Structure formats: structure tokens, C-alpha cells
Length: 233
Image (cartoon, rainbow, N blue to C red):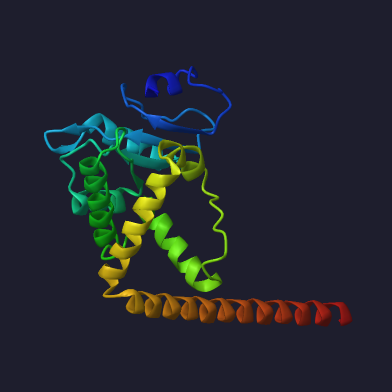
């Protein structure tokens, strides 16, 4: 799918609010009306992100569109630390696409790429977006620890369901999950250290949520008291 087709209203359903796997072939500084999310395919220029592609990312992001930069597995000149840093500063997400043709070498290189991006993500404190499927699987590991392995994890993100999951069969998904699980455990020091961190984080979230609820209840009580005083007067 070409960006020119999206801009001209020729890409699929004209009323769609999201387009995935889009190749930037034209300059575009104003997104089409109603566009909420778009994934753009990575294009390099002298080892950097293509200038036109970067202009589209920034322009669409400033206009309120959720932008995802898709990195094909076949793209070899990828620096995880650099790309995560750029994405963090510009406010867009990243997606690591699986190999188009599977082989032991291609799959292994993809698993290594997931590990590299996971390592950078865990040290990038200001990254507020996602790196698919790395951050999605980390979320799954947290949910699994909280609810148990028997709990089915429902994928709700439209991009994951309508784009990324359609690019891989279940056997490959299971393989990269097994590898990524072990990589996360290693990055945290061990499975036990990961579980300690996850439980500590959950406790902090629970405590913070409790404080927020308490504050909201107190605000509502004060408002009700004020309304009662006004009615009595």
C-alpha cells in the first residue's frame, strides 16, 4: 500500500481510520481527515531514516495520528539503540516485522533483533510508546504472573490483531515467545528476579491506585458537603 493512495482516498475503505504497512512514496504534511493510526515501512537513506519518511512521521504525529514505524526483518542496517532513541524523542512506536521467508538463519536473526530491542527498551526510561511484539509480550508476562498461566491473554490492540498477527503462523509465534521469555529473564538477571520486579511494580501500582481513589472520594465528599451547606443556606 502506498501513502499516495491513502492520501488520495484510494486505499481500501475510504472511511477507515487506520492503515497498516504503508510505503511512503510522496511528501505529505497533512494526514487525511479521520486518520487515527498508520504504520509506515522503514526506509533508509545513508544509514539513517529516509528524510521524507521522517517528515511524514513527525507531521502526522503532530497532527494527532498514532504512528508506527515498521522495520522489516530483511532490513540489515538496524541500530536498536539509535531507533529507540529517535522514536522516544519523536513520539512514535516501532514494530519489528517477522521474516517473509523462514529459515533457521532468518528466524535466529529475528529472535536476536527482538532481544536487542528488548535490552534497549528496558534501559530507555523516556520511551512512552510500544515496540511490537517486544512490549506486548512483556505485558503478557506480567499478566501471566498476576493471573496464572492458565489465564487466556486477550489481544486487544488493533495493530497487533489486524497486522502483526497475520504475518506469522502459530508455530513461529510460539517459537519467538519461548525465546523472548528466556531473553527477558536473562535481561532481568533470572526468572526469580523478573518475578520480584513484576510483583514490586504491581504493588506500587496498587498503592498508587488506592491513593488516587482515596483522593477522589475525599474530593467528592467535600463537594457534597459544600452542596449541602449551600442548600441549607
